[in-house]
Image (spheres, rainbow, N blue to C red):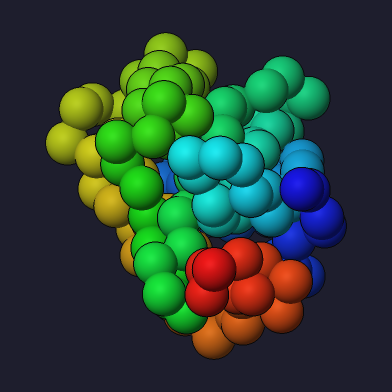
Length: 120
């Protein structure tokens, strides 16, 4: 089951640049349930995805999900290579992006049909 994600700002700060939200959707499969957020660089290239899992009625960043692992590496590479920042600045930018997303998603309700699946 896939459905459109919540309304979020189109662009989010990422250190010295911004990252655009290219796609966002809720996904409930056999072994994953949560929100995928796909990012795009300002030049139009993909910047990877992050996955936020649903635990009960809460949404939390899933750092172990393959999409998140790949997404963090792609965002980090963009900062290091294209924005020419050092590793500490890149890590701070990623931490700030995740904190911003946690703040925004903290008030987002889990869709009713997805939360019904949680009750099963």
